Image (tube, rainbow, N blue to C red; front, top):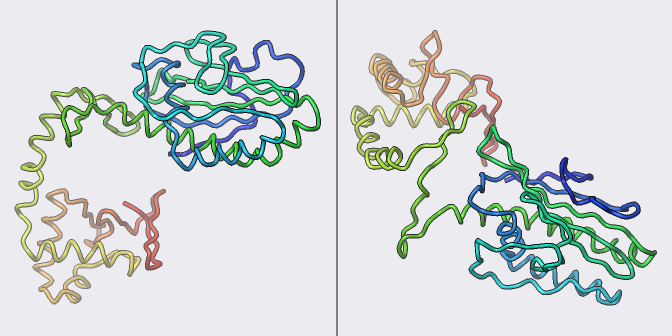
Length: 314
């Protein structure tokens, strides 16, 4: 769940529309979330500013103490409550903290003004038609009226950046939770579709398909592993453990010697493990190079164990 930081507003944002004069500070934070087509920008704005962790509330309180000598007020974070999904903010309305000055169906722009500084902040949803994910931008623009505005913002800036990032992270988690439906106490069920990664594509699987797959999963897995004897498990576990230690392909002879098994028996076991698609593979010489989740082949993925060993990930 990575948050990216930028020093300019996102493309197609309306946050600078009709902005008077120059702005002296801008930051924008982005996080990618699953598509939220069922929720309006208004509902997502309310969700962003109300689903706030306790420690972020504490940071906001500390920030308010810092700015109090300057006569600046930011308001109290409301407690989390059930939000109306039909909520709509029009120009002039107060969106949790700040007054809405502009809006579109993908962005809510809010602003605050006092004798020391003027600022705008916006939540902007940038959809990607070719993906099941969309980008969420939380942007802030600041214009200083005088030196006191700069003095105020200097100690607040680190808190501001941290708060914006954590708001987005928590927002992403909250949106994910809203995609779950709680049907009865103690049980959580997925929505009608789930996303399945296949190669470079993410596709939707209808409810009847994933329900059917889940109902058969345990039996299917058990059936695939029924062929494994105690020796099969012994060999499989050994190669997973030893590949990181040795750092090179493991021959049948080496495995047989270490496990005190006949070489012929080990070769049969390796062949059966590979044949039954247990994510164990050998090279042309018959030595094990892959034993999920590790491999001695070059891959873009790497694993570092708490014991210090490093190896490519399968």
